[in-house]
Length: 224
Image 1 (cartoon, helix red, strand yellow):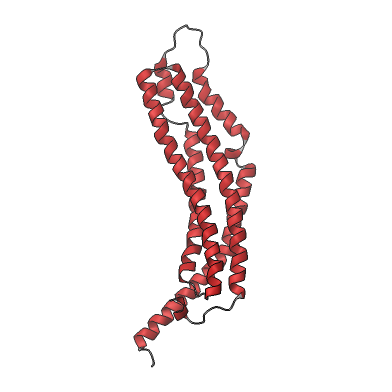
Image 2 (cartoon, rainbow, N blue to C red):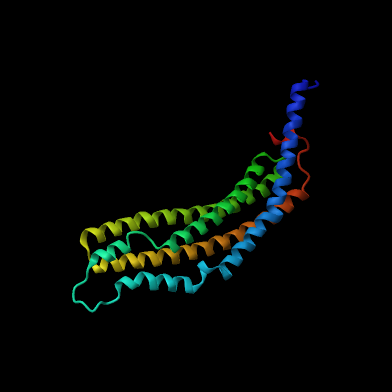
């Protein structure tokens, strides 16, 4: 029985949309995903935020207020004022990392969105499922890193409140250690993200090639 004209138009539009998504997926898998991996590699190698000098500069600035003074008494008020917020460089570093994570998530989510609607046979579905698993693992590390940044600020605020209340030199030192530790942790987490992105790309490209080599279900109706 021939489908009604309205149904035929709808199916045609959906087929064209599926075809467009497939072309976009190829661009994401063959171009954008590996390019992002190259970008992260270059960032880890040469970006200022991932050099030892960046940590050293932060340590120097943060420890400046804790240097011994000639006076026997320590005025804690300037110290408290200085540590009321993280250094601007730390905020900039966090924003830089978050932006790169957002770019990765945008790529991986678009690939996974295509997989949910693509035309695939039962044999092909296993390869696509492996892609989703690998990309989700990459997403998880990125999201965990973002969560780490959020947790840092809530913990830091508690430490600062303690410093304001108790006005102890040792609490100020703990705050400094917390700030430096946060930067180091984010640097390490970004490296983990890069490693997982490489794994995710390798799994994605291999399984996408396998998916393409197996004849799938023909016709848009095979997507349902």
